[in-house]
Image 1 (tube, rainbow, N blue to C red):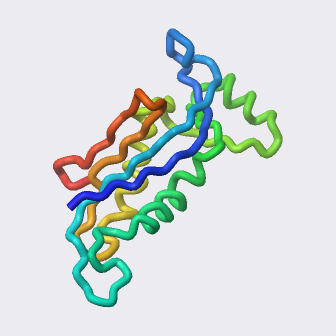
Image 2 (cartoon, rainbow, N blue to C red):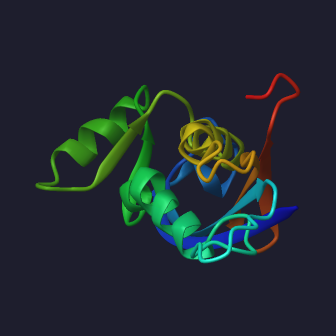
Length: 151
């Protein structure tokens, strides 16, 4: 069985080598969808009885391990020196430095890698993270998928 939980957050970024508008500082209302697979829990009296995982717990774990850090932050490529230096001049600015350009594809992969261990077999029901879908706009998204080697 698969379940999906959707969360939204706001963040800024720029794609320094882009040849169009995305090279400028800008922001998005990102949407992240977390798809998990596992067996349906069948334990009378258990709060998760009949579920793969409680949707509220999917949300809590995603917020704790990823979304709260990225929400209302500027996601900056650490080698984008002009932007990093500028952001450092802003007192108490929420900046997240990344080792890669903050494209939808890279952000989806980072999110998957971070959340993969968080959800793995949380309830003892063979729970696995199958996919992280990150929408940069309503019409553009990237999917990071579980690899065949179980990662």
